[in-house]
Length: 534
Image (cartoon, rainbow, N blue to C red; front, side, top):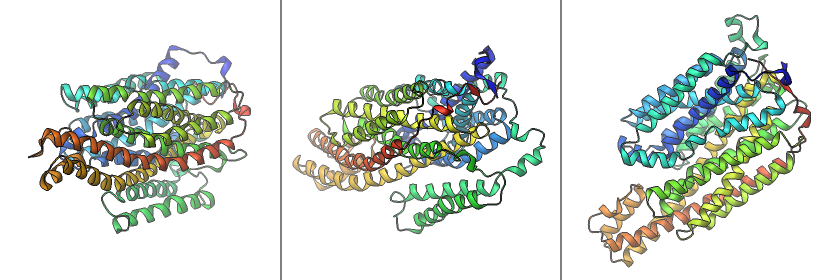
């Protein structure tokens, strides 16, 4: 511990913070580039299951975060962070050279492990080397470091048009390499006090291996079941129910029971992080809901831009700038303002939750003819979401005991990814069930009105379902009039189907509003103390 008023901001400290910002960004951009290039990658590797790349990354992050947070609090951050950055570089190389789904999924699993490590260390590392009262400001700067990759959808479109999507991952690899070099030379946090004087064997004996097994295997099985249900297998099949039930029991019953009543003296989720205050528990609840809403915007708004509105790639890319900038703005502004609220955060968080809920729900009014309305609603919804998904983590850091900063951060990230995965599964199934019916009904009616035969109509339906640009025009026997009529009908099919996704987000948003109302004043935690010095 040190008094933050006496801490000098040397070149070494600044480079360390800068490098942590680089790996924070590097932990996210691999997933972002996969998301924005998903169709191109799927066509290139000849797979209809490309969404499992996203699932593999999310699974790895959610499963590894609780374990990584505990290990970093015991063993220190430097070498673990360097190892995580190396995994991100390896993942970039494997993804960029992948020619099969197996290679791509393996790359994302490796990248997810690296991302879980690096995002955690970046946030917790910066938090613990700055005065407590300035954690909101410094963490907002960490979040703001994503700015160079805000136009990643536009980058992906331009790079793919000029050459191939593979160059995107050369960029991610080089970015993480620069961060790794900075960390190696300038990031030297001291050993954690809780294991000074212990041998490596004694430290390893303190690890909650049972909790690690229950959390990692449980979360993995549960998310595999959620992702498979309604997509690869029916919800009632053994392939879905097996991992869903076993994973659910391990994650939501066995793991909490072990952490509360188990005999291990150093549990993965120490009761001390919740003792005497409700800030951390409420922050986790808010992060969970914000994670669900975050992935509804991140996953489905690009679908709106590409398939509800029939326009050119550059326009799609430019419109795609609105929601990441809004998420960033909300995250940075609210995190920054938290340091100046004198602890009065309840009203601010409630207003942001209400904004997120209202404007996300308003996207249900989107149609192929009101693009300005849609982009505006998405911008405000994204601002409200960004104002919760990162600041809620900052909120947890304020109340976290110094020796458990890493654990609190890790659990927050796991909660966010778990919420995101559950939300994505719910929203995807809502969308899929609606889309199957709407696409057939609307496109078939439009094709019949344009004089298309049954054979041509089937071909057009398959073309629009494939989401491959220009596929409809290549259908044998399809005239320009047929393509034009059915294209507009397919846009309406997407709009009508996505409407129910936005409706589904509303009750979850209301729950987040209720949680915000119970937030207490946090002024007592806003001191000048820092957790560690470097």
